[in-house]
Length: 144
Image (tube, rainbow, N blue to C red; front, top):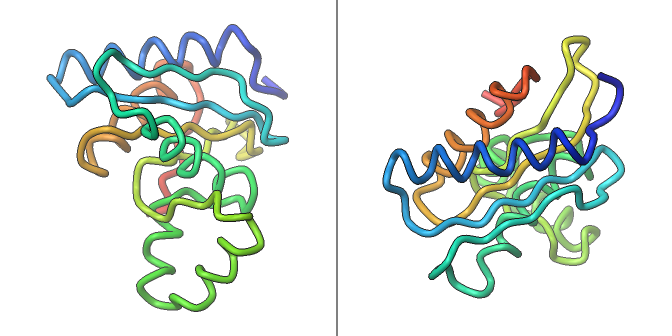
């Protein structure tokens, strides 16, 4: 696969939310971006907060804007807070540096996009993203 298609993104959205329901997570939002930062899929469950999708977007944003998952950005924020603050300034405040944003790669490690999940703990958000990527037959890059 050389690009993230609409059909694959929609399946990933459904798979991520199904994983969240199976594990009884809080109401969730999921955003899937292609490699160029285009929105391929967005979904928010009933009873989620109105800004939750923006947090999910910010988690995915770093994956395509800077080529790194949000867990890695989170680690960098602890080590070099001024640098991550500067990155977020360059990104017009769209970067959310907490786990839950996972880079989507193909078998050759090419970035196809990123998925951001928000609504539960950051680790649970990330687990839902990883599950969706794996079910699509792609490679989840969490930056660990």
